[in-house]
Length: 274
Image (tube, rainbow, N blue to C red; front, side, top):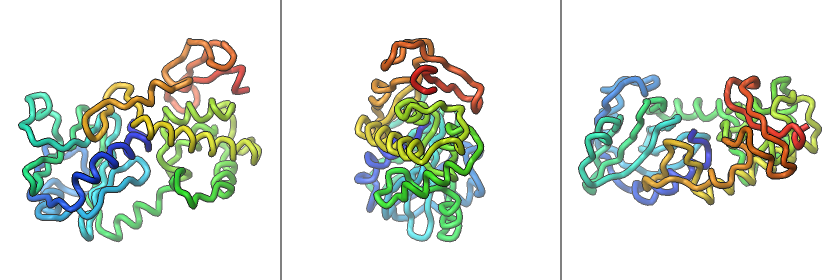
């Protein structure tokens, strides 16, 4: 968390408010969220820069700042908010990055456990970073057949392959559980044992679930908030995630939760996902 739908929701909320604004100055409270850059270089690189666009790539929010990009991966407890009012004591404690805007508001990266990451990349750095990521699952030009074949080349469990950001981006534990259940595929099954039809079905179900989650403004399990500070609603539609021990919505079989596949909670129906 957050996964593609959550970051997409944040970006859609913030883009109209940030595009065209200028960052006057920035302050960072902790260095442990930085990757490949020092605190001084980050704050100096953000000062007096215009925000040309706000987009999403994979699970990252990307602020386009001329020849640089601020890349924010919120991690499990990160949030991006814009505020005009003074922060409360609790909010101030967890405001890792503050960027003062030219209209008097402040863009805040808030992260209770500081599990997210911040990068400031030039054009080449961004090109290299982007090239290492897999395709976007909701790209209208996605080559579904090529993606299916790439998935089927791996001997790993299909759940791990579906969450591998080098294969396809944006899918984490929540939506991998949901997609595999909807496609009726055992999460522990080796990816190279899937048929072409099964791979296409899994991709289609993944796309459907991601789109529905975006429409519901993401899943709030614990910490996630939208770009307006509100909880999402997609968790109300989860059929398996967080429902271990409850009856399957399709057949009534008790859902099993296990940590054996990738160390994360996997919930499945042994009857529907044979």
